[in-house]
Image (cartoon, rainbow, N blue to C red; front, side, top):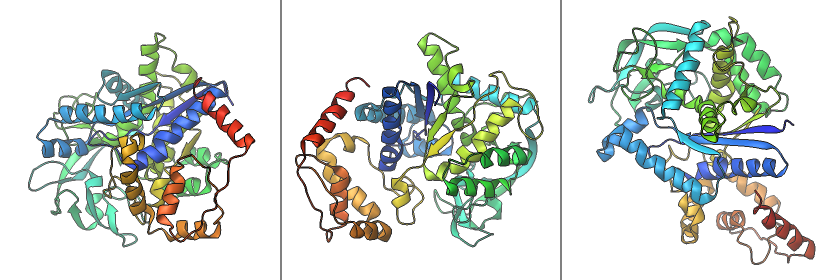
Length: 442
C-alpha cells in the first residue's frame, strides 16, 4: 500500500444532533482505521465536515425561528464538539459554507461543463402549495411506479434501486406536512450520467475487492442511468458560476452535488492551513494513494456512481473524453465501508429518518449508558437474524472488570442466551497493555 492514505469520512447534516448510527458506523470505525494506518507508518489524511446546505437546513431553521446560517452554525458546533469528545482524530473537520468549499465546487463544475458533461434542461419541479418553497425529491414520497413499493422517495426507490422523478410517483406527498405537492416547469442543469456508462462500467468491473452486493447494485444503476439534476430552486447553497445563472437568486447547486465534493475541498483547505498549499496533491494526484470512504449504506449511489462520475468528468475521462480540470487528474475512490448499525434496523433505511436520534455525547458520558442501551435495544430487538446468530453461538466470552458495551447490548436484546465468562490470562493482560500504550503515540 502507498505511504499516503486518504480517509474520507461521510459528512453529517448540520440540522440537528447526530444519530447513534453515525457514531457506531462511521465516526468510530474511520478513526480506528486512521489510527491503525498511522501506527503502520503511513501518511494519513482524515477529513470530514458538516453538510450545511439544502432544504433540511431551511426546514430546521423555520422550526427554530433561525436563519439558515444560524442553524448551520449552531449544529456544526454541536457535531464538531461531539466528535472532539469522542476523541476522533480528524486532521480537519470543516463545513460546506466556507469560501474554500464554494470555490472548489465551482471549479469542479466548470471543468465538467467545459468537457461537455453538463446539460441544461426544462423539467418539472415540486413546490409546496402552502409555502411556495421548492420541495427536494428526498422530501417527497409515494408509491414506486416500477415495483409498487409505498415509501419510495422522489429521487429513487430504495426497494428496487431505480432512479425516479418525483412527478412519476403514484400518490406523491410531502414528508414535511403530508400535502400533495404542486408540479411546475423550471429550468435546471443536469449531470449527463449516460455519458459515463462505458467508463463507469469498466471502472466498477475492476473493483474485484469490493463487496459483491455493492458492485452489483451499482452496475444495475449504471445500466439504466439518466441525466441527474445538479441545481435546485433554492436561495441557500453554492451559487452557479455561469452567465444567466449566477444572478438568479433562487438557483443554487443541489446539496448532493456540492456535499460530495467536500472530500476534495476539505483536503485543499487542510493543505492551505498546513502551510503547504500543494500538500493535497500527494493524496489526490498520486495514483498509488488509496482513498477509503466511510459512509452509510444509503450512500452507495453517491459514492460508487455519482462521485466517480464527477471525478471522471473533471479529469476528462468520461465517454466523451475531454481534458483534466484545474486540479489535474484526481484519484477515484479505492474502497468504502458501510454503516453497520443501520443494516440491523428492522426495515428502516436510516436511523435519523426513523427518529432514532441521540446526541453522540451519550457514548462518552457514563451516565448515558442506560439511555444508549435502551436506544440500541429498541433498534435491533426485532431483528430475528441477529437473535438466531447469537443463539447459535452461546459461548461468547467476556473479561472481568471490562465494560464491553457490545456484550451489554447483546445481553439486553437476548435475555434467554447464556453467555459464558472466563478470566483473563497473562497473555490477555499483556495484549491489553500493549493496546493501551499504543494510544499514547497515535
